[in-house]
Length: 120
Image (cartoon, rainbow, N blue to C red):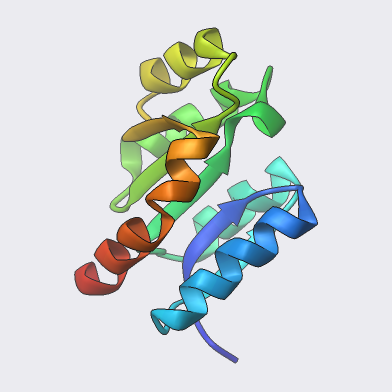
């Protein structure tokens, strides 16, 4: 079993498959979760190089990530639908490193995963 160097909170099965596919091209293992409680468990048990968070899916519950953002040793990338700028502000407030629209995340996914690979 490949060790998960990236943990992704992404309930959308098609989009999570895209993340896994691109990560595999870089030789990175991805653990996808569609549940915030499972994400928090994974973050306690593993030391990923990078974490991706679908902010729209976590809307209303982002505060549960705040403790992790203070203690973590990896980069956290949050992405959101471009119309939800309030959510982007909340994500920045709790300490998510990079907050981008879903379109920008998709466009820069290869570049982001290449950075994760080189940091490992």
